[in-house]
Length: 498
Image (cartoon, rainbow, N blue to C red; front, side):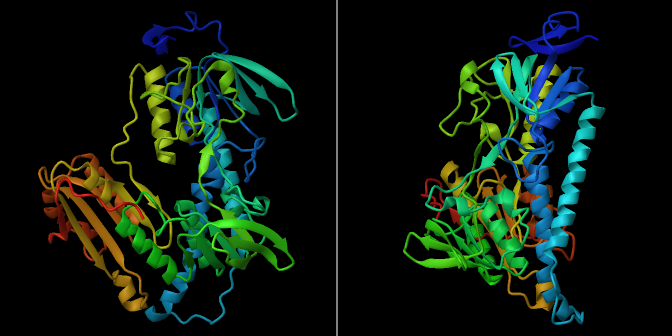
């Protein structure tokens, strides 16, 4: 079957008998997470002969176990969101009373039941991903893959045996791994992998980190009745997000009963009869049943043998790639968190699709990182797209217009919950284009997905204003914010991330 392939940097017409006979596969993918699976399936759809390898399934990853579906499906987005749903019911039960629901004073939570149902769901999804690959005609191999040449991969199978495969193109999609803080007693702490599969729900939890994983687990555990202490180095959590939104998230966390410790790091952990003794860099001590390190993730490249084939990496050991996801070795490519670009599942999917179009579809396609929306699934959630106010000010060539609205969600007026929703639009004064949007409040992620489409299409503030709202809804506030909150002159110094 004739098809177009990328050969030595050029798109060429090719047949199975021409230029490919010396390779076992057109494409070999190392890593069957979101990006790798998408690239494999799409490439096979273009007619390529594709193989993919992945470690055996386990909810908690290591150097020898993983599973088809990767971090997002097995030990990331999916199980995390299931636990967020479970934790959210605590607040719903509290709010229900003022809506007329007569609830008994004692409401029990069965952690083991939720854990079982979560595990069953990720096992189901692991099977779904395998079927997707099989139905696409992709050859699946179980084992650890590493490079042994510019066109060769060695797969170490679970029984220890090894097999080499050749491929015209190799795609690395091994994702990232959670990091542990390097302090005495670090072996007593857990990462997000273990946190999603704890046998017992702790009564006291200490979390180190100010990023989205830390904030989300703080919300999850607190929603399940756990006493939570959250430690982070900055003045506010969620560095890199809009400062006003960060402050709202911090207030909401405290309002839900989470104890915040800004400007504080941990210096030592030790085991005692009463649990884990946690010592801070200020000399304070606190006891915990579990300590979670949510201190970032690093590209999973350690065992790929990259140096042997001269694949260049940066200081974080992320694989360096060009605009098309090609590494320093022309036949080797990489997508997803292993490249440390924008580390989000939908971005890995986009990169995998663009790779397949470029290499096997005859359609050279660069991933487009403009207006990528994202969400932090705290309770309530935060979601953003485009530039924060601080980023807009730093990049502005003209004045920046800020429209913001803070209000009580309609539900809270009856429930009595003291938790504000805040929405913000950042606008270029010269072009009237909306540069960024953000929201912290119920359903933020669901609302922001639609806003992202508008910004991707270059929507102006006038177009937002001329759009009829859905009433009564929180989302309508985005099209009714007509009063300017503040105007920031071009060249003003942006407030630094706290």
